[in-house]
Length: 464
Ligand code: S3P
View 1: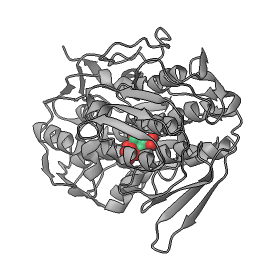
View 2 (view 1 turned 180 degrees about the vertical axis):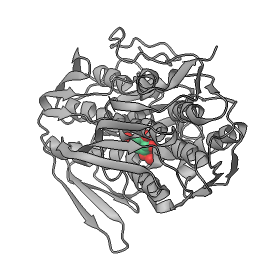
View 3 (view 1 turned 135 degrees about the vertical axis):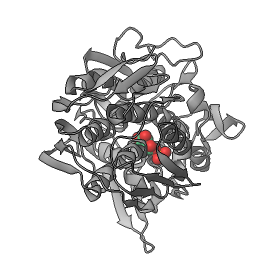
């Protein structure tokens, strides 16, 4: 059962033993080279979508490689509360008995999505076009995150959203009796908002269109096609990208193989680049081009990264990443690249701190509304570890130490898994150890992170 649940809930998957992993404070310190081949857990974005779209399909879907982190278990529990049946057959192997598009039923309790923003926003979309009322809540981090960005388009499709102040959770979604298809231009680049609208559009007659200025991750589009939905895409005169979905399709249950999460692989990749003489292979990683902006950036910085064994699973590109320790140079990371690497800035900031010269990351305003304010969190944490850093409204400037940063700090993780993992990587190369106050958030996306890094040769222990 997710350990972050801070209000009562009977988790239907309690006892599955699936999430497990780091808890309490953790500390990492310098060691010798990292070596070996590893696989990281399944992609979080794809796992959420496989469960949700499987639940809306007719018949059974079998999902392999599902991420069994707390965020995805929250989605599984919510879908069960909404009337779908899910069985965990083996580690990572789940069977979903779908109810068909529009076939979900009113949940008897509150849907508690824990720390999972993707689960909350996508499921708000799913239930917005079902004629019943659902109540949503989450942990302190999720309850602080803005939901107006999904509420606005869902209300124009006929749903009513009743939130607390600032359009935050807890909130109620009164689903539309007769959902309307809409055409909607995203005011912020967000795959979660795009996906919420497309998932609501599944149960609306006619064509639902989402227009985005900069393409964001397209896992929903790929997964819907994999289950048999018809989507079309076109470029607008102003260069924006429009995606249209024909509503009320018959989705057919199918097999899904979830690749390893690139955003989790990024931490092992970064550690291997930074720890001298390392050589690591991360196998079976999802390489969707709308996720891999970090590779482009690291290659520009001088990182020795090679992709081999390219293939495709469930409509997603997959491959193995080979990485060798490299001397990194500072770069300018353009704002237009942000949607393709939005979750990788915490670890990029650590990489930049260990490189030579200045790295400037532009277009980071969205980082302020992630699991924590990551822009402030990275700036404060790096400064505490002796790195020279400037935080701007939507940019971060890091002066590389051209070698091991001083370290010697304890970083508050503020319920943010990526802040936790980024600073543990910093401790693997810093002169003095780096501690985090709470390792538990790592279980939301990367159960087994500590043991995987130790297997490669890293030194990580409980800090108290
Ligand atoms: C996600 C989209 C991104 C990303 C998040 C996962 C998704 O959020 O940061 O970790 O699975 O759709 P935004 O849509 O807010 O950019």
